[in-house]
Image (cartoon, rainbow, N blue to C red):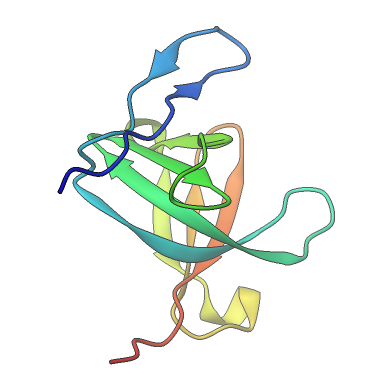
Length: 104
């Protein structure tokens, strides 16, 4: 059974389309929003050095973090007040994310 392909991520600044199918890793993380600073569960797709995020697994991603431009990736439990959290910093933005508990 083949799954439907996911729409590409379109970079709003450049118009470049990035294929997000055949990801190396994918799954849910919770990300702090940039403007309201509330926490939102997002579906993340790691492909190469790019980490894309979307509302659901089947929607086109609406954001991308270029990990090749990262200056730091570090634990952020104290800063975020969340367990299993981490911070990704790039020259332009700092992202706060956390992973939920693993349930089986």
